[in-house]
Image 1: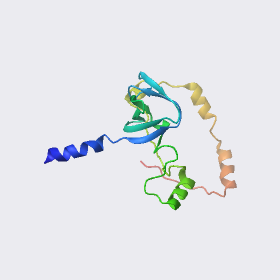
Image 2: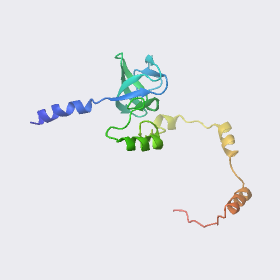
Image 3: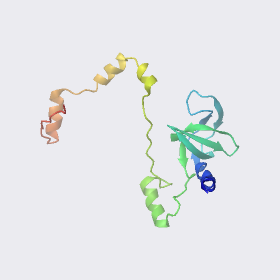
Image 4: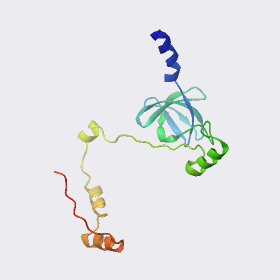
Length: 158
């Protein structure tokens, strides 16, 4: 019985979702910028999107080429596709809210890994540029007063 249930679930694991490339992209052999390029994919090309690995998605082109593209290069559902099950009114609201697909996407890719931390080097020029954005205490006080803000004392956690 378990085998039968597992066999029925296999198609769900291999589910591919239709997507379109929003810009021309390189199809990579692995989910990495320095991986070998399998081929170039033109903007607006239709692909089937599968599994995700960090900021990368495995895709299959209509020509049958398979590989990885950057997640932000994809628009799911194809051009102008509305969410399934939306009524005409809901489609109109979705277009006004978030574009043709009605889909809202939040993308998060974790930043630094152990190698990045261990090989980090100071960059004095960037630090100087960052310090250029700092505001003086007097300037901050004038800004706060102009917005009718009041000073508050906050205890820092120990």
